Length: 537
Image 1 (cartoon, one colour):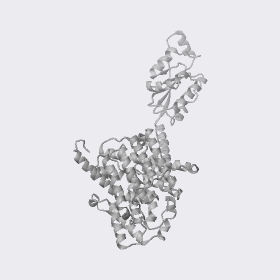
Image 2 (tube, rainbow, N blue to C red):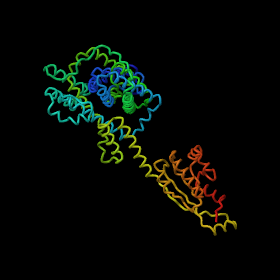
Image 3 (cartoon, rainbow, N blue to C red):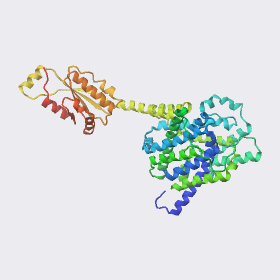
Image 4 (spheres, rainbow, N blue to C red):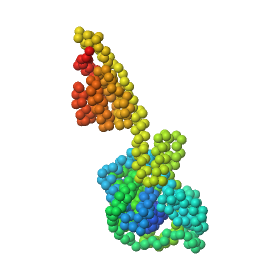
């Protein structure tokens, strides 16, 4: 949004953006609330509270926050485990928000930029698959399952336990959300169109279908968190999952927002605002959320340019809850399932899938490993394993680019009578180990392992002038090699650029060297040998 726009035009854009975002957020909030197991009202409470707080205090002014797929999947698993114990669920969500605040306070927000894209791709595609699997049974009017594995295991029951009316409404919902005319979608979002059309049709025809059920139209009650030490491991672990996933989800949306508005978000401030919003949502029985990409894009495209648009979106949702909450009780569950299935398909990362034939094998391995772990094991495990696997493969690729060569360089001594006598009576050589590329834990075994003991060699120069960086693993390996060479009466010498030489001085490496010195180029080292070295006969 241009800076020279008038205040009235900016306000008009914010109002239109906030209203449009609220219209899109309504069916999604209801659907995610139901999918979580906490109820449709919990989805609305989360969208209202998080949406307002994150917009008011966050680091991405135009971002719209609310319940999202990854967060809903984690909450659903917590609710399934703590069946009938909503206080424990509240504690999980509350702690998740606190952990997010801590992540922002520790300034780890910028680290999200360093998560490899194949990890994000596999994770998002896995989330999409999970949502689709979990909504297949409710779409047909059958009882749903809390885990994708159970949904897969009982996929056959879809053909025996379906209800005709539910399945018909679910199918109609899918047709609307997938094939809604683009010309009309600019005026009314397809999820809202499906929600209105199918609900009106259900009521008008008196269909016997599963509906949302009672939605309180009053303000939500206060729920205080309570930490039970008997299940503290799961509570804390799940809370950390919420914090990490919510942070990744929000900051990725922030990056999308930056690209749309040509601005830069404040990642750590965004994390603290998201955490505050999720913790407050927990206190009032709402499910957690994060920055929502689709709602944020719609807000910006509709003219939203300041925090006011996101805050207005939350206020509009609150008014809808208070005024039309009783009407929402008539919404069929199959309709919400159809809307969520469309969300699941939208989350799948088709951009990466399209380039599978061209993508590097390492990236494909990481992507599908994360995808499989997300669906079959656990979201946070998938992200963790994905990052570790991507790091290992990257380390291997970098190590392959690091090479070392061993050269023998004859050294001419001074033309003194003693020098000529030594040169004639002894056979000596100076070996130079040329190391090119990063000298780190992934390349130490390759480089140091090739050196051998150099029995009979009097001087070994490690020429590392073309090493861009060195880590402590390489420093440790180098110090061990220096000591080993000295034990064989071989003199080690080091050549590094000035910056790395200063780094090695902090680790005390020069003190291990016979000359107590690190040279800054190879010529300097050879010149020093000519001036100082006396070879044994």
